Image: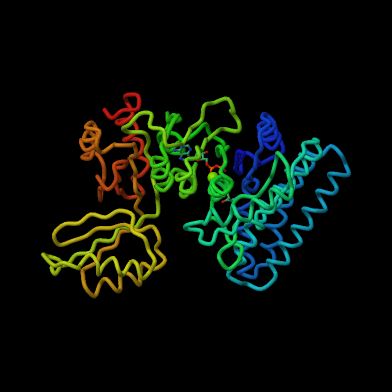
Length: 442
Ligand code: ADP
Ligand code: ASP
Ligand code: MG
């Protein structure tokens, strides 16, 4: 059994949906297909939720209408049989009526997830119905029957497997279709796996069923050595280790949800990144195979806040770091980078929700400086630190506006903190300098 996930662009219109059907029809093995919403639909659903909270009826109608147009255009083009087309329209209208009722109903904590996960519900319905029309036998599964992950931070793949296996046995098929993004928490409330979470759905499901491989199909030919949105002349990487992919995803490589590889590492299930629009391209294989060590790729994560904590009391005093970490722990705020000197610590966080309270508490014991709008630039490669060439990266630092550096925390990365307004220039400069030679530091 393999798990194949297709992202928003891959299912963004009728022509692309046809391409996806061609790809999944190419092999006979058993498959679970995990689908995102049509591109743009989740954003519209986020608007719908906001309009609901604001009590703005005009914006509720506007969002629903835009969602309707996207799905009806796809129906028009996909369904040649007029009965199937009208059944599909009736069903999409029903989903839109459900959404209107939700949006006009009580505001409650789970409302966001209940609304924004509808995009996947609507698209998987259309997709499965289109397969029926093409006489491709398939079974549509409701992910809400089995995606009981407990905690979104640390999903329980065994619990998902225990619910999913009987569902699969009850409905034998070689082709299952289900929704990405949606899950249920430990109380059985609908939750999301966060934006971009369908990648994570695919690896959770892959681990839950012990899949042969997980394929993530998107709009680019694999993970590139730098962010193609900001840097020209990037190129796809053929092999990454789980650790390399995890670092790149966590530190901003948008092609992968930050938690994607975690569920499959222990089970050693390879993850392929493939291009729906260029299926013959090699793509990227993520596995525990070590092909070449040293520098592989650079990514950037925005929205970082640097906090400098300075205190003369720190001098020679033990227990100071513990006191500081306890403050962050109390506010459930995780720290990404950290550097220390004799009298000061600088650290970074990406979750600002409790920044004010944290600073107020820390100010009692130390002098605090806060700098917002920074980015972490992450230079990644297995054994980068042991690679004696890597010191050459430091010769570039005089040209870069670096505020903090982390080196040696793991063998696989060097992290630099720069102001976000300098991010693009930094990525471009590092790309030009570090990738001048094929895959090696220069
Ligand atoms: P999907 O909707 O299929 O999940 P995403 O938009 O989430 O697709 O991810 C694919 C996009 O990620 C690419 O189009 C590309 O712009 C962006 N991206 C950012 N960093 C990288 C990288 N290092 N390699 C490849 N793509 C990247
Ligand atoms: N549709 C969701 C989003 O846009 C999940 C996904 O595409 O992975 O975030
Ligand atoms: Mg994505």
